[in-house]
Amino acid sequence: MARFLTLASCQTGPVQRSTSRREVVERLVALLERAALAGADLAVFPEMALTTFFPRWDLPASDIDVFYETQMPGPQTRPLFDAARKLGIGFALGYSELVRDGNRQRRFNAMALVDDGGEIIGRYRKIHVPGSEMPEPGTTVHLERRYFEPGNLGFPVYGFRGARIGLALCNDRRWPETYRMLCLNGAQVVLIGYNTPVQLEEAPSLAHLRMFHNHLPMQAGAYQNTVWVAAAAKAGFEDGQHLLGGSCIIAPSGEIAALATSQEDEVIIHRADLDMIDICRKVNFDFSRYRRPREYSLIAEQAGPLV
Ligand code: CDV
Image (cartoon, rainbow, N blue to C red; front, top):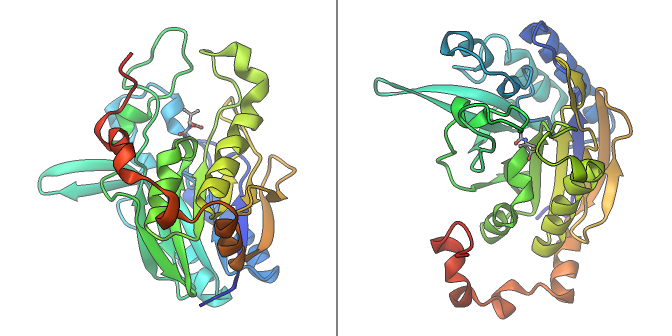
């Protein structure tokens, strides 16, 4: 079993609507090259890494297909997979997925896990889809619930170079259930991609806490589930909206081991010691011994508080 896995978080700067897939993929390949050169085994890219974060717009149905991938890899994304094989590095890529299911079209906010041979070895579809179907007064427009249905693959965990990898996307990182499900499925590393607006109209009094509320749940998730977390933002000013940076790699102790300092394309690296997981478990989190699942049944039965 691997003891170390060198993780890279490949943050990107904004991807404007006018940017072609070819240009974006070139940027992602350049980031992957930097990660590989720095010795990374596995890199994570942002959520919806190939396009602008289009749920910020109220768009007619006729305008949205351009943001989705019908094939992964497709002709435009193939160079990234070829680069992974050439460089001998794995990666996780967030993208918008359009699939045909019988005569129905289905749309998911998805992430693919690709091995160092350029083959897809895992898939995830975002479970916690935030926002609304229609714009809501007094609220920043965020129409993910119109453009995507909730994921239907659960919280799977995949083997990569002897380590067990789970995937999550953006809003998933705020929910303790995400990490606990991945932990119980055996994850040692959780890769997360995100697009988070800096400003939210609905809660101006919390505006100064946006970065704190970015890192807080990921640090708690890492600590409480004794996993490594590597998270990649799409950051900077994208089509008029400011997206939060703060890409990071977090140890099972809850400490931030590496942190992005820019709001542009940037690679951060950390050599993750997988043995830290067992050390952290010894301190408090001997799950099989101390957890009381029967006392927690409400968690699986009920979505919100009774009152
Ligand atoms: N892409 C996201 O899921 N963004 C959310 C929004 C709702 C703020 C987030 O949790 O960051």
